[in-house]
Image (cartoon, rainbow, N blue to C red; front, top):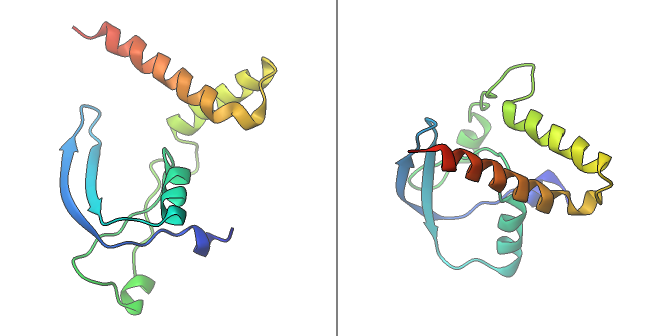
Length: 122
């Protein structure tokens, strides 16, 4: 599948956002019904990092051409999340894990880590 085929474009209503303790923001968009192919693509995008541009109305071709490049969180180095993912992958392989099942392992390990920190909260 080409990058163009993996691009998801849809009309959506921006319905809210939530500020998080780690200084990130959750954005909430509501869309009308999607096709099975669109839903499948969205599931593939789950927990992936990408680029979003939002505008009331349509983008013209000229506007699309002039959208600014997003700035990476860290220049010339891996982000902490990339480093953690890579370490988990090496550990998983060393323990004889099946690469096709890595994402399930990663999600379980991340949930354990989150629970560990959550349990430390007062």
